[in-house]
Length: 225
Image (cartoon, rainbow, N blue to C red; front, side, top):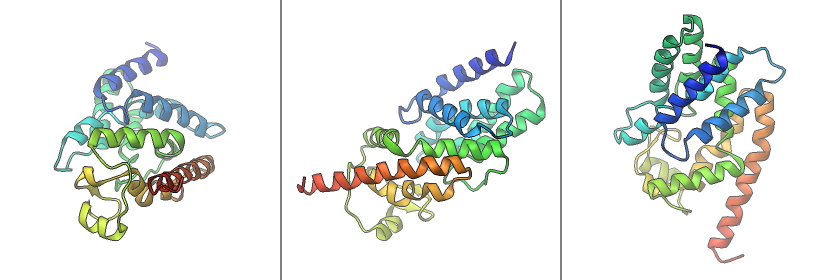
């Protein structure tokens, strides 16, 4: 079995385990393509990067369904990757490298990406929360969680009330959340968390697009436009 056939098997497994349209195989494909873009001109292990991109979010549904907040989709993804890659005959060094990429891709995670491949996956995954696609995904999330289109709240009070563990912690009641709050807490600051120069460049434009949309939304809600 060549690498292309192995990748197809990995993607099929990923597709079967993902159902949320904010974190579906379309998201995986976008992250995969962004990884390839960010990897251009870099000395990376493309096999590791491609495999990690295709399977990084397979634990998302389990995390979403766990109301305790104890399930870590990155840990599930790393475990799934280990089993799948071992069944496909990859050596231990590849398996461990892919696991490192997946374990460290979470924005709110405590594991910092160390390898270039892990940094690229982290950056690509975060870029998909910004720009036009980021706005679209945010409102898919709103629909799924019966959350708010827009909220006017004091951010510090909101964090104390509804975010467990501080600014980057778990959202307690998702129905009180909104894309505007998520932008103020997370999305607007993503550029500073990225590792690669090209990702930061892309993030600059995408962040402005999202910010301009929220400013327009606020004016329309207030009846000013």
